[in-house]
Length: 192
Image (cartoon, rainbow, N blue to C red):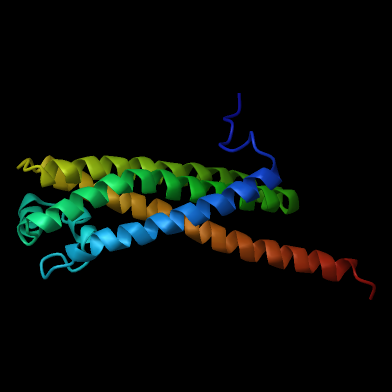
């Protein structure tokens, strides 16, 4: 039995209109998250929350947390809370965009179908990785001194970033491929 793809219950037009809504809500959430994360940039956390995600060890994580005063730690906690909504939004948005690209590429060149399926699921798995990473970071913010948490945050953050990059590359590549394939078909169809 073949694994059903997410969004297969929506027709192509419904997928496109849902994607537009998701992109809008995701962009609004990005703006809110940027506002919350701005105070997290310090000398010890030059990339803000991303520095914390990638710290990798307890000493570096504690140095970052110590560079944040109590108010900034509240911003970090609020940002991590909002990130649970954001991870649902961005992973669904990326997966749906990949699904639309996969559908149009498969119509034109069926060989692209399997890779598209892999990327769709990868985009959703990125959200799961982000959730695990968030739990680890929250544990650290709450004072845990276990080396497990910064290590988990690091591994799942790197995995998340790789999966997101795969989806974005697929979307760009698929959009370009669709245009090229479409223009070739139009050129071949036009009278010589």
